[in-house]
Length: 254
Image (cartoon, rainbow, N blue to C red; front, side):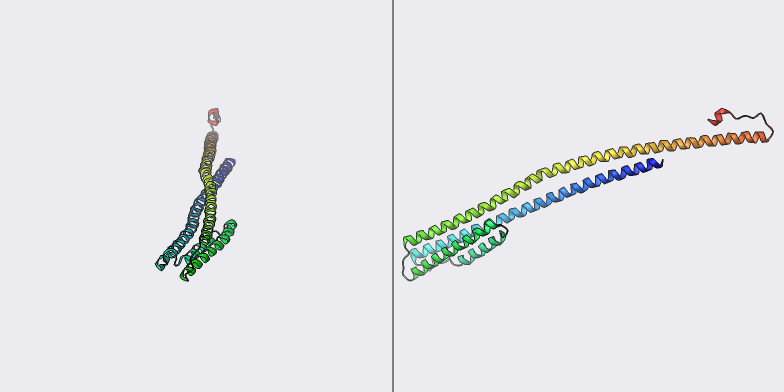
């Protein structure tokens, strides 16, 4: 009886232990999967923010060029409105994008080059506006040089945006792989947990049946012993009263 109880207790502990381990593993996989999804969403927002700032740089640079061209053609300073504040705006977008990509060495190297090109472009715009106000006309060669610098700025920004998008594709692919495997792993873990639960349930149930059968057997033996004691006591009482012919019926001892 004691061995059966110990075995049942051991089966319960082993089954509970396996189920607990599988539960911990499943919870860990779920936690990592959720973190991956959150991380992926953050990277999507990060990429969109970097691209937005880079595109805003180009947009404000175009504004500066538009103001420059309008003023050079008309000498009307009203055309300089799009140019006003463009330098500070571009500097702000540049700083924000640079901070967002501070962990990316390739992007940081391109930011250094981009900043140099932007400074050169604004210096050329400022010089052409200043010369026009002094009555010095812009030459075709200077305008073509300015266009070349602007094209270089566009190319650098294009490369940087492309790099961000490639990083996003890589991160998304990694996240998608994990998102694909996670449900399968959780499902397998749950299936194994169910199998283990059934196995140890039947083991414990079997031990319970054995314990009940053993207990019934012990009760039966105890009842038989009590019957034997009662039969012997009855014969002893008869003999004590002088009935020496009294005998124990074999059926009373069985």
